[in-house]
Image (cartoon, rainbow, N blue to C red; front, side):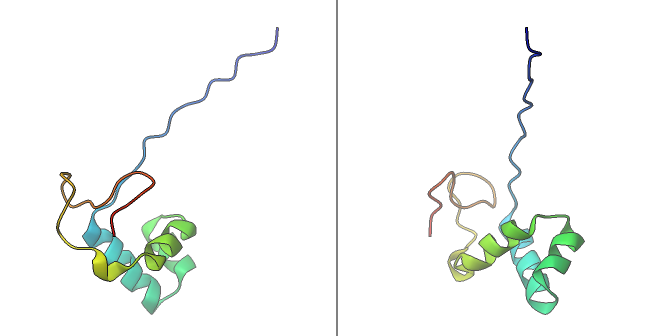
Length: 76
């Protein structure tokens, strides 16, 4: 009988809007890869945040503190 493969679920991390803005500003001043290393993030996440329309990020939330959108279809 083959050994059982156990998959561990990884909890999704969500970031507040102010942190995303800080990361994006740092990435603009330096480089995406430098920002990824500095904030210990994946470079593709930073690219995704930059591609989003940052101007549509407001402090209005969808019922969760300092977060906007949810799931596959974020607001904005």
